[in-house]
Image (tube, rainbow, N blue to C red):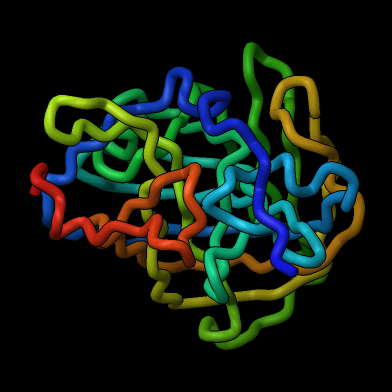
Amino acid sequence: MITYGTRDVELDAAGAPTVDLSDREPLELTGGEILQVVYELPFTGFAERIPPALHPSHPPLAHMFFYLVPDSPVGAFTMAQVRTSALAGISRWSYPIAGWVDNADAAEYFGRRWGYALAPATIDLQRRHDRIWGTVAVDGRTILEAGMYDPEPVNGTDATHVGHLNVAHLDRDGQVQPTLVQAGPQLSFRKCDRGRPELVTYDVGSIGGDKPYWAVSAYAGACNFMFSPVSFVCDPNQPVMDGGLILSGSLHAI
C-alpha cells in the first residue's frame, strides 16, 4: 500500500512566490560549482513532511546543496537549499524545507520563474585539498554547515541530482492557487569528486524539519547548470498518479 503525504501545503504557501509561466527561455549558467550532501532523516513523522500529491521515500532523505554561480542575468550568487526526498509515482523528487540566496535579484528571478522561496543569507562555499564545505549564516550566526572530506575524482555522470517540486502560487483564470512547480537544473560537469559526507551544524529551529542523523553520500564539482522552462505543475492535494499533474503547455498562462 502506498503511503501519501499528509502535510498541509498552506504551511509552505504562506510567503511563497507567484510563478510566471510565460517565460519559456532556458537558463544556462556556466562556470559554476556545486556541493551536495545527503543524510537520512528519522522515519518518525515522515509522511508529515510532504503534501498529499507525493509519497515518502524509504528511507527519507535530506538533500543539502550549494550552488555557486559567478555570472548570471541577475549577477553572481550563491544559493543553498535543504530539501526532503519524495516520490511521484516511480519518479524521485525533492520537496523544499528551506532555501537561501545572497542576491536579492536572484531570489526574485528564481522565485518568479521556478517557484523557489529563497531567504537572504550569507552563504559560503569553500574548497581545500582535503575538504569541501558550505555554510549558511543568518544575522551573523551559522545555521547550516555541511560538506565532505577525502575527495576522490569520479565521472560526473555518477553524480545524481534529483528534480525539485516547489510550492508556489499560480494564477489560473483569475484564481491564485498553491501549486507544486517542477524545477531543478541539469548538471554538466567539468570536474567531480565524491567524498565522505559530514554535517557540522544543522539548526532545526532556524531551518525547520527534522535533524538529519545518518550520512549517506556527498559530491562536489565544477559544472554548468541548465534550468529548463517549467514542464508541468501539480495539484498539491491530489496524488500525481490520480491525475494531479498538469502539463504547463496546457495552462492559459503560457
